[in-house]
Image (cartoon, rainbow, N blue to C red; front, side, top):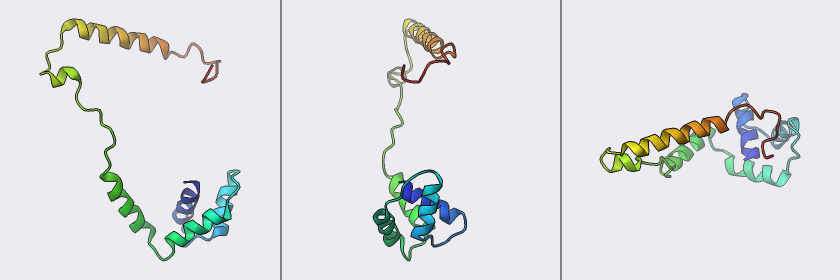
Length: 112
């Protein structure tokens, strides 16, 4: 992905046909050591193709892939008649979650 991203950055910057040197320069600017064989493979795959057409084709393929969405809650699926006790429990859980997500422990690391 980093090679594709560098290629796309070069094209967004106005270079309609980035070379391996251009991609290596972009990657090295963020401290990534580039693999020449991967760059050559990428350039061989996109040679003579319009990047906008490739993006459009990829978007069509991605549109056909389910991407979650969750669906309806059990209460809505049952006709929307959730008991009051269940609603009260949800509110209590939300309050507990809010308390846990407070900024009180900002001095600790993410995985401590």
